[in-house]
Length: 302
Image (cartoon, rainbow, N blue to C red; front, side, top):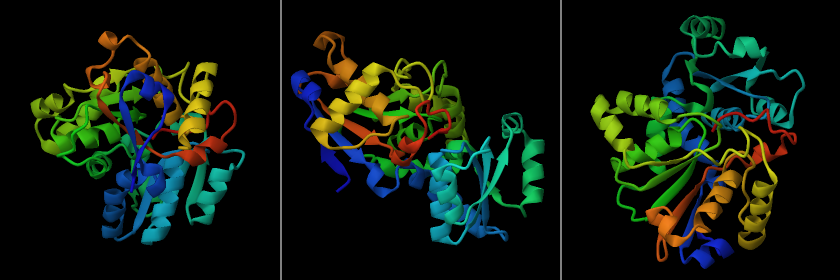
């Protein structure tokens, strides 16, 4: 079973039930994002997929593993990557061709002229954005949540927001989603809304599916990949009490921010987190990223 009830002091004190959907046991949210993208790559004459990430990228790692399993040739454009990390080595061992590029070149990854050059250079592969943030990635994430599930709040970390968007699409916006941003000063909604628009073909409908989302933008602990003492302490407390491991970039911050919410006076909490409520936490995986250096700067978006 992927769902595990968490015996956690802050939840018990707040009178709520916390269940964790442990996608870390099935390759994390990346498997959902990649499934349809791998199918698309298999349908091309090249049977190849090209994507992007940093030297500690969970996304590159998952893509290499998924490509190997499916018989898809994979190419990873690595930001920096002058010094090979454990993640990069494991990507190579899974058959991924890694191409380190400068940060300046990496910044061009959204430019069509640059992407066209990569397609020509690597034999017309299927190109997937960093973090799997495309329509196929969003549509694949529908499988994380059933349309008929009844929770008072569903909490998920947001890097690109693609996972959140897939769950919103699956439930037609009916799920009480809470998005915990791992990035400082980033508004995720426009990008997610754009992917939903492309998926359903209607801008108004896409916007409506996100109207019920609560966005927690204050959980970044100083910036992407950074940790502060509060997050470290909450992370240690959670793992000590629940025996459920967290990743340093996303789920550790999610749990710390959830604890902050549960410690508020009941009348000030999110409506789905008051006494007697049932909360579902989506564990997006990414545990291999914990091997990155103390600064965490090499980890890329989920």
